[in-house]
Amino acid sequence: KEMGNLTTMLEAQSQVLHIKNEVMELLRKEGGQQIAGLQTELQKENIQLKSEMITLKTMIEAQLQTINEKALNIEDVRKKDEETLALRSQLLNMEAELKIEKMSRADIEDMR
Image (cartoon, rainbow, N blue to C red; front, side, top):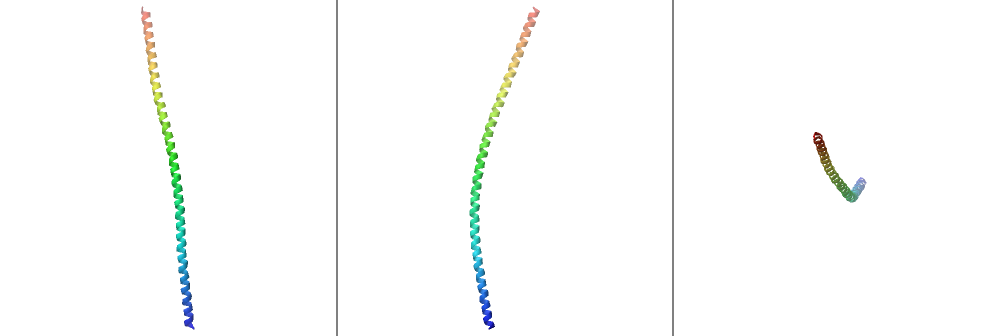
């Protein structure tokens, strides 16, 4: 009778071990599916992030182009301001020379 009980216990333990192995295999398969699902999700997010980065890069390049154009315009205005100042300076010098010449003529006429 004890031999029968031991045999029954061994059979039960064998079945439990078999069930544990099946559960472990199912967990491995399910884990693999979950990992594959996560990888797919990560790939989708990666594609979305790359797309967003391209969009941002395009926006930044457009803003840099605008900034460069404004800088060129500012440089043109600065050069024109310098030219205007130089012309004003020449004009003032000419006016001063003209006044000096008029004064000199007046002095000469006064001497006569």
